[in-house]
Image 1: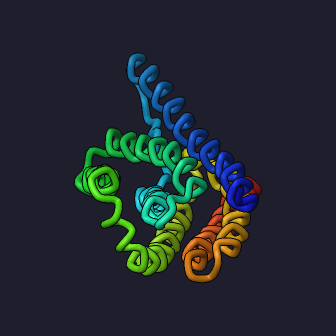
Image 2: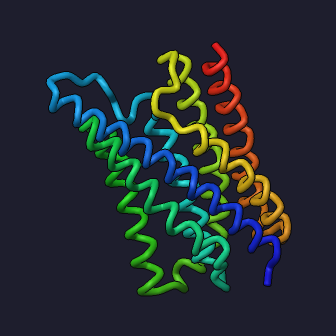
Length: 223
């Protein structure tokens, strides 16, 4: 048993809890808005100050680890199993954003998220050897997606700055993932350099981005 992998999976449960908190917060505000509409007045926005590119970049980073773990010659259950639940929850968040905003951008991100998930599952079921052959490519993809993840954090930070409010962005979603990211760096190191460096790199980017957003969020609370 890979102890580091097990610990990383346990910490990943905190990430799942964080995204679940975000989804529940959206549902709560959405219900309040529905009640206010029934009373003839509502200015509540369930996804206020939640940047779609930030949520999508988080989805893609989790999805990429899921696909990478599925592609390794020996399926890595520590990368695959915990991320299935997170993928479903974040898909639900993207769906709620699309439901509220009803624009082409949100529709595009929702359809893209669904398409890449369906594609990798279908290929894995039909010919997993095809995925395994793509492992070297996945390492490069993970590196590129680390940049994309950083870009997502940048856009979320920019939205907070321009809107002047944290809106319905969930602080627990940001904070609970930090422990996961730290354990993810350790887990990547135990996988060996060849397989583990993309894992460690993306978690390092995530740590930096989350620390910046948490400090920004706290700054709004203090002011």
